[in-house]
Image 1 (cartoon, rainbow, N blue to C red):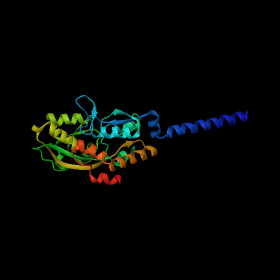
Image 2: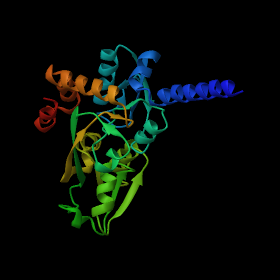
Image 3: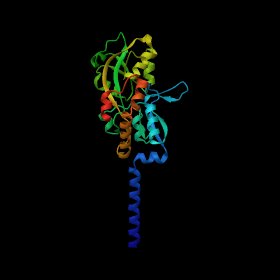
Image 4: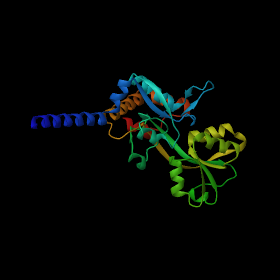
Length: 265
């Protein structure tokens, strides 16, 4: 009986060890085994993520994701997202990575990990020419549109005292609000604001003030050392060979900020 109990205990311990290894298996191994990488991209966030006239995905974040999948030797599966669902998509294992203008913040870094930055993003407040808004203090008593759960939303919530913050569920809705006159002020990225300016020249939209400049990283779940090492090496390689800058310049009309490039050296 004791022998049987000892064998049973050994089998149980072995099963726990196997289960523990499975739980802690690095996502990089799973990606290679599946021969595909699932990457969350917001395709309603031009010029970083969008669809062309044939409804095919395009944009700087899409091109970065496609290059990463190609260099990893696997197929790319896009997991559609909005600003609010990027991190939940990682936490619920719907996506392996997020490449979707994911700016580094200390709050986000508590629940996910970031690669070294692959691009940069200016965050600003913009609006129609007749509205005076040179600082957060000037937003008091005014209404301002923002994409829910973004860094711009967090900045407004913390600092725009007395402002009415109108939150939308995605960037497409914010663009529509600015272009159609539903919103005279918006908080968004510099690239997205330029899209608004181009879509509605009659609105006379202009930048008001810069909130801050962000590093954009590839997001992944915590405790993924092999995946983190591979992605960081990939960013360094493609920053050095100019491919990431080529993608950024194609869609944003400028080089990646030197403050970002220097972190990949």
